[in-house]
Image (tube, rainbow, N blue to C red; front, side, top):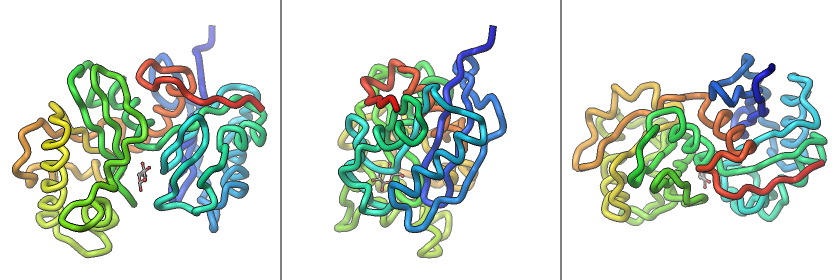
Length: 260
Ligand code: BGC
């Protein structure tokens, strides 16, 4: 009997990546397919790109999970910090469901990565409060307690010393300001200490592309009591988490689904 598969698609600022995910193994069942994010990344053009990814796998009529880099409630995208503002207020689950002729679940990108990390990666089996953070163009956050997700926490937008945290401590900020690992780790440490003061997590999971270089900066982070570990699923966390959410993962909570 063939294993249960759901297509997971990760919408990012530079690429839209997807793969059918084997839900029993919790990993992509085929090599992922990537298309460049259209510019401007307006809903209609992005929906076409998501369809291109689905078509690559001959996917139609079967469930799809899609991540979005902003707040998503009941399938509607509510914010667009690093994407085209025309996404605000769009029923993305309906738009994509119609375009793909498939039931589509849409959720925040960090929440998707968090679900994957909590189920299969660095947060597996942890029941206390866990914060999964993704460092990329922005900072994404996924807050778990007793293994349950509190969706759309948006902790990258906390204000820190008069600045938005993601403007100071994202991976993009490190590149834009040409910061040394030491200086950037100082900023990340200040941010984590602030989060620790607010949430008392027992564990921080550090994700996003930069987690591949965790050995360069994690040892430099000071002033935080909680355990800090790199994410384990790296590039695939969003895709796998999106597929898990679409399949009704317990950590994902109620998701908005729209059938095309
Ligand atoms: C967005 C979040 C997103 C994060 C990572 C932030 O700017 O507001 O929703 O999770 O970037 O993409």
